[in-house]
Image (cartoon, rainbow, N blue to C red; front, side, top):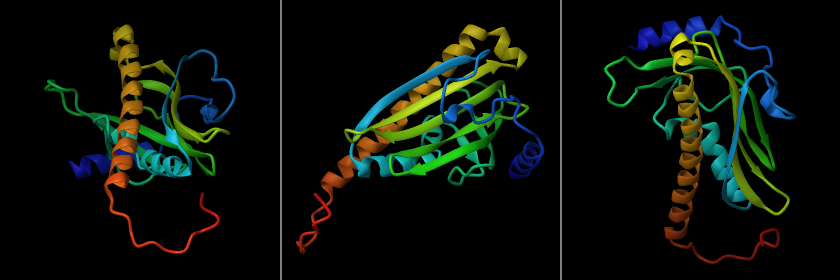
Length: 204
């Protein structure tokens, strides 16, 4: 299996994104001629929530938390090529292998995330972005935005079902990140306090 994945990864490295508007999810309106999806969920408040959620998202947590495997598994880095693998529940078909390329990443005081674009062999063409952000009031949000067109014959044949699956996948991304942050918050609450020390005036 590893040899087959390595061969597929090497082939994917040699390809270019299968759509011209590379990086369009980074800002501004999404390009015309595609289906658009944009959904977000509230995660909490403050820089610690932002940092925690950002680490999870950059580590492909939203994908891993919804049943995808990521090969090779390393934090998202601009320009890297990965294979997303998914087994359909109850199906005897082999795992679907989806080639993607990370087209941008961001790590700023109020924004952490990345986007990947499709490569030849993906059942769609387009881009998905996964962004954790903190607004001026300190509220932290996780947003998934995407533009895509169906390209594979089996996806076009079942277009309504394929679009529904994409919508449900994005909902699961949101739920996975929200759940991971909530679990981390509970762990922080359960952790015993350390010995008291001098107050840090920079911390409120």
